[in-house]
Image: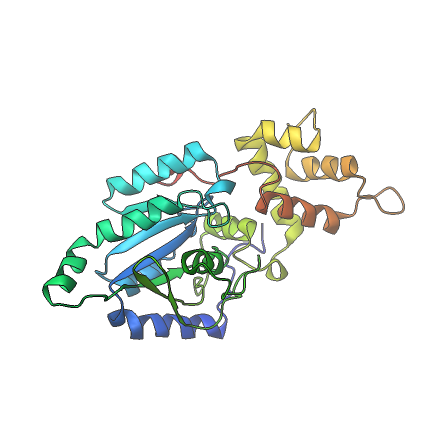
Length: 288
């Protein structure tokens, strides 16, 4: 995975977003950090925690319907042991959404009592929403506001502007563009971010990352891999499994070769959309 090592992708809008977060942290009562439920550790940007400081934080593991539920439950238990408020949600299916809405006033009860003592009736909580790119922030905003104001698409870095978004749940949300690291030096994190689409496909080798996906599925979810692509033997290395899938799907070119780009694009799309099944790429046992 030579081109996955030391990925450098830090567009100007990300540096601007970091400065904006720092400058406006004093305006909010709490921070909602969105992470990808399939990669709760890899989608945690350490730069975000440095900026947040001591603000109350709620971790929202988004896209939970795409992740292995057993693994998600382990992550929630692990994070709660660290005294971190955590909830798994899927904003498209609304799975876990009511739990999220109930948890916000519970964890901010002291602040709400302060508002009452000061006669600040009608004062909503204010929360800054942060997260890495392509973690589903736009869909989160739309779900919370019950509108479709934020443009959504499965591409990283789409939400570029900052804005306050009102909700009917007693909290106003401050939108911020997604953030990535200045430089991704951890190979494990870089691969997971690439697989889930947080890093644009244009700056990685989608063929190599597809081989890695095949090996991860072979090791973690062999039944799902075999069932989805009608495979009888998945004992090979990544590129061998990849070639077998390409031939099974009829992705052939003249001369008997395979259409590598077409197969790689298909594999990544089917993983990211959940067509292969509910898959988590990392567990607490592997990380902690």
